[in-house]
Each structure stands twice: as C-alpha cells, then as structure tokens.
Length: 68
Image (cartoon, rainbow, N blue to C red):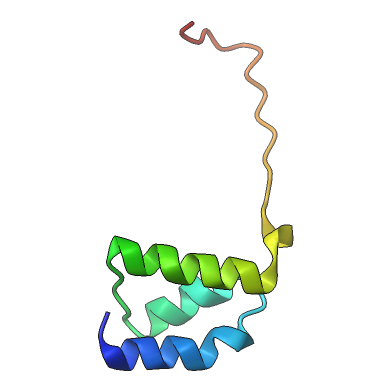
C-alpha cells in the first residue's frame, strides 16, 4: 500500500458502516494490502463498526462422514 492509499483509507475509515463498505472502497481505489496492512485496517474497521456485522451460518453436517 502506498502512502497515498493509506491517506485515502485513513480519511474514509469513519464513513464505513459495514465491513463490506471497507472492502468495496479498497477495491474501487485499487488498494493492494500486504498481510500486515490488511490485518491492521481490518482490525481498525471492525473495532469502529463493532462485531455486530458478523454473520453466522448454521451448516447441517448430520449426513456427512467426517474424519475423527
């Protein structure tokens, strides 16, 4: 990520209402993250919006044969 990308993200981080807003912003502005940068900004956004956006999906595995 370049310094210009970092400034764009820092300026827009307060406007994200959902985590996908952050992802869309990064994609729209062609921002490429290194792993450490992704973790840093992911954590910032999740702290700001809270963990209420987490989606849980219940998967029925009753018919599957799973390893022990």
